[in-house]
Image (tube, rainbow, N blue to C red):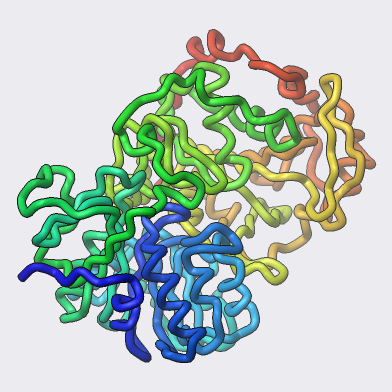
Length: 529
């Protein structure tokens, strides 16, 4: 039977009080924004729904607007399962203030739970999360005091410790997005920059007897879509919402180079301005090796592709992002999760199968807090309840890890001038502290598995050793005592071979690393045990 075609307001009216709603989207891509906006309007008009349970695989929003920000109203949501909350700050405030029940599980686990719900399985069994706040004894992914129901168990199976993440209740509504739907509801995603896990979400809701609502840009004649472009078969779709003004991302209406329609010259990608953030991205990029298959996190790490493009080494490595994009030059800010000139776009679940199995050779990530043992917190600090996203999956399963971030935080003001760093005003809080508030990454566990870990800041570089953090490099213009050691909450060891960070990091224009990069030996491919 052909799906109903409804305006967004009528589709939103199908969501009832207490419904369990799965929401598609990844960062700024794939969000059924018109339907979500309509749900918010109905709620604010006193028409409901109330007390929803929401499930979203990762952050969905543009920090203070769009996506999950539309659900940031007390009474609209009772419980949420999310992979990340940092892109939806107003909703994150509800978690911080104990106004919703909130679970945060690793992004790869969240993709697995979509498939588990579709197949009627009880949950996901995995090693991902061991040694972190996913452990039942450390909170089990519960994000506040209001959240009490245990959803994670620690098991011992065939000689290995594992975590078992319970699948939630059977979902009733799916809110998804595609590009084109034919008259029978077959949905193609030819303009989408990611394909995510929308198929699994549709299967989960359909198999539970619920309603699958899909927002699309346009309609096509029955049977006219290329079968390899169709990502959701029509029998899974109950309602279509046509939104001709649908944005490709929260920052771009339509860029054909992000969905594979065209390829643009890399020379068209402008270098980022020279700043302390670009200095860190450049220094981190020096850890790349030919043939690397790399994951890039948010923040400074997301600026590394721009460096690779400027240096002409982007074709010698393969950059990936969690959403399923492989190759090309990944974007950041509102384009995070997409790439210019991608070589492949696969479903996110398959990307995490590769990550969790140890397929990456190198990963670049951010940090919020670091302690003397190399433990890292990116998930919960102060009033930020950001959650893990893909951080735990990636950091536990990749041999070479590079964490990037400024040494201090707050009102930091730094200039990069004449080949040196000038600290105009230092941050008002320390990031390197005696004990992290939450363990998102375990330094001791990483050392036990043989992982290689570095911390790159704008003024110093550290290596993780069995004896703790070792200071190995300092920026030109930075003072060892006043600008580094006194700005840390503990005393790192100092390498007897302490050296300055390379001067070329602090100058405008390409660093000229292309020729020397090509001569570097490929990284040995070793998977952590």
